[in-house]
Image (tube, rainbow, N blue to C red; front, top):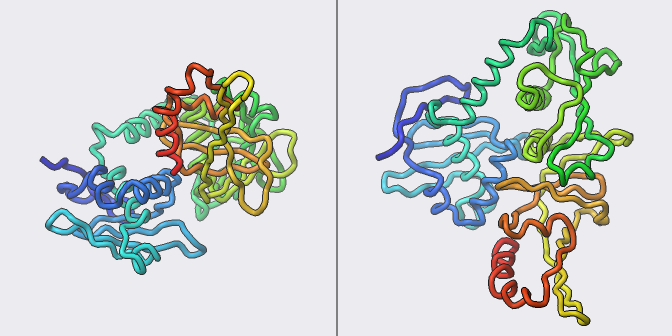
Length: 346
């Protein structure tokens, strides 16, 4: 029996309840694991700006390229799909592309039953917490066309030693606001000024409201998952670091990882190390991996990139640095774990 859901148009308005004619599993069957993986990554980065479902068509706008990409696909009566995406994978190779997957996942997200959707529940809880906050304890935020709106920019700074904090799972940050050629901490910002922020800044502000459980704080601490959400929201922007003049760019292009293995000929131990080839001839330096349950990022050469795949939890110690497999454990590693690593990184 198909799940009943609430559909929305491109303006975000509720439409009549209908049956969603596909599932995440069906998307994966249509696309194959590689296109599904890439599409899921686009979806998690928030690339799908608009999407609507008017049976049997799903159309959307993806934030790709200078003008964005309009895409479309059709769910056929026989349970298959016809792709109308203008991308090369579809037009020249006839493949189900990652853009179709990203739009399909966004429709599932938007139209999940609110009573069972943790995102909707969390958003409702967030609004309730903010409504209960003491009056005047948070800044005013209005649309850019609101009377008296003051254009402002949110500045997020990671602690100077955030790389040392990362293994502990808590990263210190500092929030400030730039407006009228001045910069003030969030806690010192006037509460009687109607600030207007960009869409990206609004997304990040909501993230930090969740972290702070209501009113914004100037020095909140992020979990690893909060940091990943911050990076997803900051694609194409920079995240600053205390004590560093230039911001750290947050790139959209995914990077692939490779595993280096070396045998210690003296004691028979196997040494494992992850490497990532950076674009534009950049040298890998001060690298750190930021790994969540289903996605991850690498920080290197003062920049952030999403990684194309992540290792199973049992193997994630490798992200923390060079890992040693004892001589006794080498045969088992070669027979089991190595095949898992090769499957992820192929």
